[in-house]
Amino acid sequence: MSNAGYDDASLRVEDFDAAIFDLDGVVTRTARVHAAAWKRLFDEYLEQRAERAGEPFRPFLDDDYRRYVDGKPRYDGVRSFLQSRGITLAFGKPTDPPDRETISGLGNRKNQFLQESLERGGVEVFDSTVILIRTLRGYGVKTALVSSSRNARAILASADLTTLFDVCVDGTDAARLELKGKPAPDIFLAAAEALGVQRTRAVVFEDAISGVEAGRAGGFGLVVGVDRADQAPALRTAGADLVVADLAALHLLAPAPPAEPASMERRDGQ
Ligand SMILES: O=P(O)(O)OC[C@H]1O[C@@H](O)[C@H](O)[C@@H](O)[C@@H]1O
Image (tube, protein in one colour):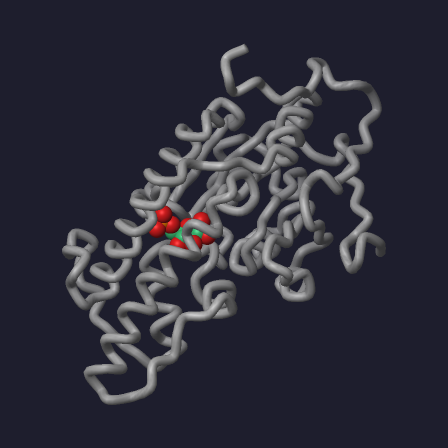
């Protein structure tokens, strides 16, 4: 162990045929954009409820996000957090307007907040992850993007990263294929199947507790926890084989140099 509580991590490239990456918080810096949209939604809603009931307002905390919402499909996140506060709402319909007091309505309101933020702020990426993906691809390792988010493809496109992945399974695919959300492993298994690789020959990269649990439950060869929220012990408990603060800390052990050099593409067209 080194790096202040993180693992001194190496990965033998020849042990893997595929690498499966979560999006928000692993590839793009959008976990915090999601977290802020959820906070806005739940704080407004809890405040209204507290006022109606004449009770004290208990805000939505970072820990609530990590435990109940992070990594899960949109409506599962709403249900799971409300349940933690003893609040039960009807599911409603996915087409519910954002002002309806249903699980769907609340989820759709959060999506409005998220899209407003993405329009304002754009999408930032973790360069270290992009370099790792390009390097792995250079070694012939297949890559997949797996996300619970129904906004994943739009986020990938806006960061100009779509071509980095052989396969993409996102929240829209999961709903269409009726796959269970993280912490169930279904979405990761669907990606491995689409890539045509055995799960034991695939490595999963995840930053959310629910995502690490999903990777572990899926029986993947290796689950790497990426700690963006000061929660390394929780990621280990959830089943991460190793935890790093950033993927720049991962050393690739490879028998030969990659087929093509791994470099960041210039984003300014030069
Ligand atoms: O509401 P969306 O965009 O479909 O995203 C669902 C979930 O996607 C996950 O990737 C995020 O970690 C969660 O915060 C988010 O709630």
